Length: 117
Length: 113
Image (tube, rainbow over all chains, first blue to last red; front, side, top):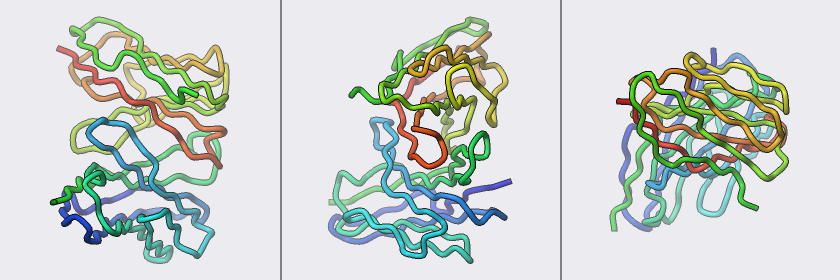
């Protein structure tokens, strides 16, 4: 069974600094997607970034980028120039590139990010 | 475009009561799903649907029932509420559940006394 592990329950970063959140996953599959979701205090789940496993190039979305290491099964999120609005729970998620139940999202337990002014 | 909407936002039930959590989307998405989020846990899949008339179980389906009579709506029914069902419930949808990103509703916080 696939699992997603986020080893950092809480992280803290100074405003304008850079922080990296870790995520590892366990799978025997080769075709899958990886995601980072942000959950602010409003509870809304917001997609931050996604990565297709077949792509070697790391995904980037403005201040957010990932370091995808397929062989190591690692998918870390880097937030540059951190802003107060980045404070939230961040969830790493995995999904097979299949339909049906195998296409459902599997989530890690989350990392709570605090941003200090 | 309202996206994914959920009602109610908050609900308190007594043990043994039943209720329905509503979920609707206006994006013509085929794939819809229900998750629950417990403290210190990520989201866990309860039930999902790949289209109208088709539903299937996820990781934690016991105590919940779903139906999908239209593309837009995917209600989640608690048959006989238990304190273990105290959680935050999220509905999500995507175009086909495989290629497309899932979009989440704002969640329903349910407390069962």
